[in-house]
Image (cartoon, rainbow, N blue to C red; front, side, top):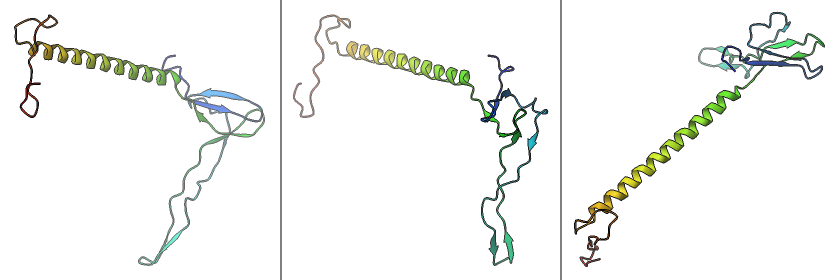
Length: 141
């Protein structure tokens, strides 16, 4: 699904099951129900300035009248599931690459430590004596 053809909003009537998917440009034929802002708190009297302070009201969602039955409908955002799936796949790919890189670093570190422990000049992976490191008390380990 291309970005241009993806619709962002769904208008759905629960009463008559009328439905329309839209990007917001083709709602001119619908009647918009006027809504007033909702007060968020009570007015407060400020004793210093001797004025009443009213909090800012919160605006409501836009509402439209259903063209078939007349009930109020509210547009809902339709999530882009393809975008979410692509993001999950990208996260999984990054985790897999990171795990492979950590395993490679761990193998290189183990290989180097095996090569450094040889005192008889033999190659790593071949039979040979490893260096005996003294423990914290000075005894041979």
